[in-house]
Length: 450
Image (tube, rainbow, N blue to C red):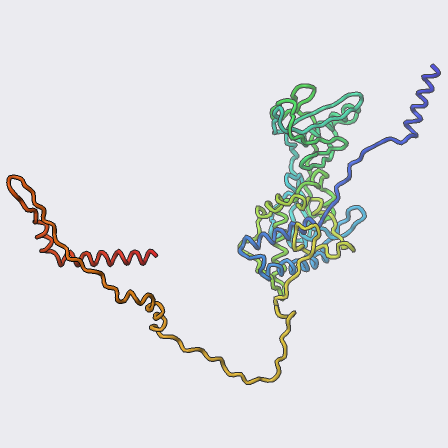
């Protein structure tokens, strides 16, 4: 027994003292500049679709005039604190710029998000939730795409596969807590991307091919068979009224933070920023299209085409402070998809020749008015054409003395066929006139078709 006891003591010592390997997943970092990129892209696409060319000096002036207006609004907007950073965020700026005048209903912050905000005109936010229904309606086809969860706990290997990523991840979390003897009624906060869903310590990975079996909607594959989901869905977000931006931000579920920002919010923010900038004195940008504002379905294609720059709910609600690396956090970039966000600059439309000043030519030299050469007559204009090929003027066609043929046949005597000759001779003038007209018309058609 002594050797066994010694080994056990050594093992406990190694577990407590020796370092062990662990892997952690980096937390998502907010990038508020992506909201500015999306607003810039929405305004630029809006101007192009309304018939304004990008080389119009007012095109760049519009972006350049919107930026200081946003900065002015940000100066009076409520601040938001996340971690150690306190500054206005795009959410509080949207509230201050009057986004509630455009979106007059409770709008989901993110696509398929749980929480909805109503941007009031008094600087407050009404928050509402909807019953959370985790999607389980995607069937899984053997060999096709699927979501996979695999982990080892309490001596048991757990492998799950299904057609809905969040549902598979929540089921994995339920199985994990069941294996470890924890409360299975607890619902985790889930972070969702296009390829991975993380719920607590469990994550589901999207697989392009190789589904182990075919399972109908509402079920997943476990232990060699298809069965129903048994996880506990989280409770809905409670309805609250009159929240400050900070309170409303604190209430956003973690599962909503990394969802793509609703295009309706981007469109409304672009509209209000453009509209307020256009109402300022000295504005030299394009007029705001009051009867044809930027729509949410116009913003969607830009965000789909630029997924790396598409903002999330986290980007929208996070503080956007002024830093040494970003001294103008509210400026709209000239090129929203560039690696560096260079602020849009307005061209010098007041004096385009400012870079090339006029030279002083001295006293008046007394140069008279310019003279114009004499206007040519119609004959002088047509003369070069009339003088072409002068030899044709004396051209005379050769005349031919034709004789009407009068054939003779021998049939019951000799007969001469000359009736057509008499007909032609009797109508010679009419036939000549008709032929003259026919040849003249043919010549006219040839000339006109050239």
